[in-house]
Image 1 (cartoon, rainbow, N blue to C red):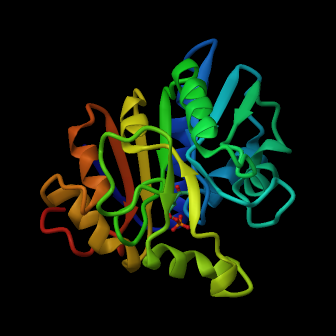
Image 2: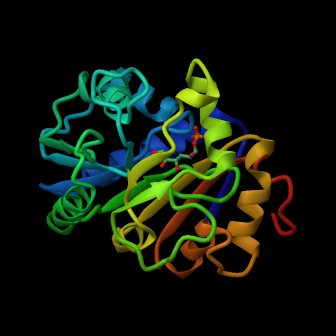
Length: 237
Ligand code: F6R
């Protein structure tokens, strides 16, 4: 893995944006895998500011809460529209449909979308507990799109966006680890001391589903961009 330790969130966003832009400009048809959450906000701000041409770019998002529609201000569809999709001319954008009550059907449908639109570059954040997308500790590395049960630590972390803890959805449609590992290239970003343990486990720990992001050690092309706080527990820098 190619690990870059930079000064702060702004530096992470700039470096990640440049890598994504290079990919966008590298060929006629591009698929980007995208993430939500606080980590990518600075990157999407740079997209809004610079408005690169993305008319040849298809996007596939990692996940969506079950039970929230695109009008709900905490759904990931709403987040993506607000931060990115309403501002640029993407060719096509895909997220799982959180309102589909046919769970197996929605997972199979999203797997088909991913098969046709395998990311050239997948952007990832990481949870404090090492999750990527909503693949929580203990979940199988063999899963494709699945109905993920959010770990209590994830519900707690995400409750900052909801009126109360009880309002946080407890399940989500999520790309599985197997789906994520299909991406040709992966870009993982993280900042803050809260992520330090997960970053250490991902980079220096054994590959185990107790630390889902550790599987990335087995992907051929991963770039990690973190700030000094997120890197603070690493033994090698
Ligand atoms: C979001 C996602 C999650 C987040 C992770 C970190 O689509 O799949 O895995 O990347 O929970 O969230 P933030 O960036 O808010 O710390």
